[in-house]
Image 1: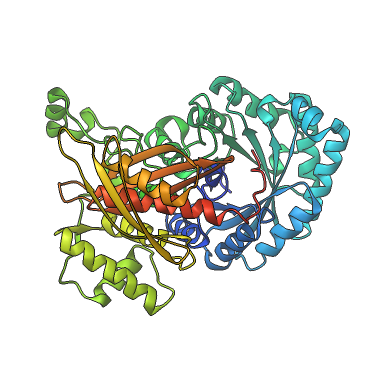
Image 2: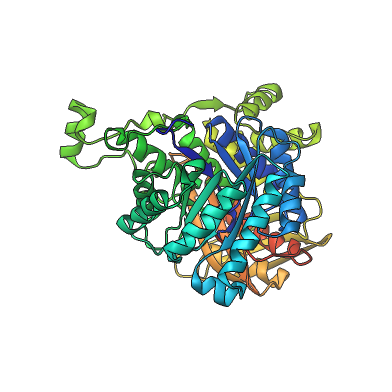
Length: 516
């Protein structure tokens, strides 16, 4: 690898999914992986193969389908984890096992309950076992940000000797400051005798809002791989944002002098896809991909932009995939045109029955909304898949709601519960509150509503409203979503979607998330 090339390692499908309520189906993960492949992401961490049968199936499906990116599975430094990862990656065109063990004093003493020399021995054993199964092995020092430098040097040197070709230094709890983290990377590269035999990587968390800054500081001091996620998705405050890292390198090439393989025109489409799939809206002022990222309201700024774009813009909106909404479909569009357009958006159908159901939903939308854009179709399909499971315990049938000044708003819901149709009416502080009370009176979920958000899918008064509902119960957090031109109806469907996610999780095993 050329010394001026930076490897982009995307962990949206693994670490990003650990964000509370951000679980994805195998089909959704595959769609995102295909988009990352088109973006020319170097390494895609597809999941944690041993975590569950579903995780294994997702890693395997992505390894079987994605051929232009290296596919990676996370693994603890345990034989069973490593073997399971190798099995999932068996058909990968380029596969990587990413194994890790904690190296900070606090983790070794209280979590692992192991002596430092035993941690080194286990790391070496894990790397050797992985190396016998795949050609590409990455080793991570969990909580490296709080690990002692002499011990880091010792365990990394041993891991490289054992066959690790990438060494990852995570700031697991987002504790480091940029100058401190950059100095740590520089120290390791200068003090580990065999450092030249491996690529050094960083994985920064955003607890202090410094994940991107720490990643750039590490790169400036010799790191040549950055682990990041679309939209900065991840547990707690998230991870380093892929779009911010990539565009910082591209925009400040004068200082960093590094290249990536990323096709930046896919940044905004990838952001929208991940947001739609997870139900996590992108804040309007989010760098690069927020709705206001290239908007100018100040008269002075507008005047400057009109005279010369670079007076107030340091990058071009079109370079990251922003473009004017393009009219793609209408009420007169046929089934084949619909199918072809969906294929352009990387949305495929398992059967004619599922295609017909989606086309029927499209026709319903076309009757309500004259102009239909790519974003409408993506939202439509996310909503369609939220209600495509014939085994859903709760099914939306119909609803009514009304509100009048001076009287309590009311709403009624007709809902199918385990095959039996029920209806109920409730009043509330508003139509949505009344509707949710009606649904809950039939569901008896006792879940806490912790988030309710509505976002316009496109511009204009005909725009669909995309609704996210987050429910919590017994430590479980789920995000339900739906989209409709009627935001009240979308709210009902999103709540019911969340209820089904809670219901479907009852009999599933939930391994603890694994942190880097």
